[in-house]
Length: 267
Image (cartoon, rainbow, N blue to C red; front, side, top):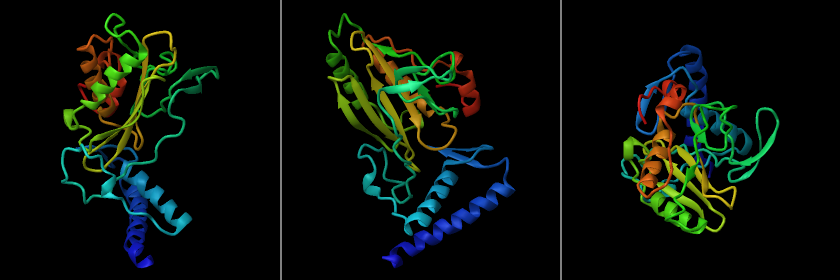
């Protein structure tokens, strides 16, 4: 068994040493990677974050389990990068509808709040506390869809029709993990093509008496997302608007800070 893991352990140890050296020598030129985009940025990269996590795993357990290409989503656009180790990250805790706290300490019911990184949007984030992450919720047309169940069936069909690789994102495909039309909840995982970064998307109804669907899309690893979450939300929002939904998506004029930090001019 140890013969099998020896090369992996050596690689992680070497990567950890390289990480320390590179942080010292390259304070302002770290390479940030996401999906099919390589951009120089003065920030901790997803790869470096993973190296630290892997090293912690070696210390705690003595071994590191290698990435399994079989875990890739079957609707990915290519097998070209199957030999690369995937950096999926851990599923976030406390997804779904739950009790949250705003910056003033007040409690509210909503989806998991975004952090400070410009790689997340959530319609239940307070627009006063977090204008850069807040987006409007989606609303279905009650003249066409008479129930929450019907609305989520249609939403499910739109998500299933999502095109991996659109706008050069999510080439690793996606998987609908949870679909509960009765509760009004959908949870989807999207994967980047080259490195296998996984982002989490949720749709949820909080008030069962109205036609409002809350939305959250966020990256698991890294700091920047280079417009990926905005492009994903907008693709789905556009498909829903064609079916009569009120789904504004992420607007450039209201999220200039996000666009500037991620070095994008459109989404």
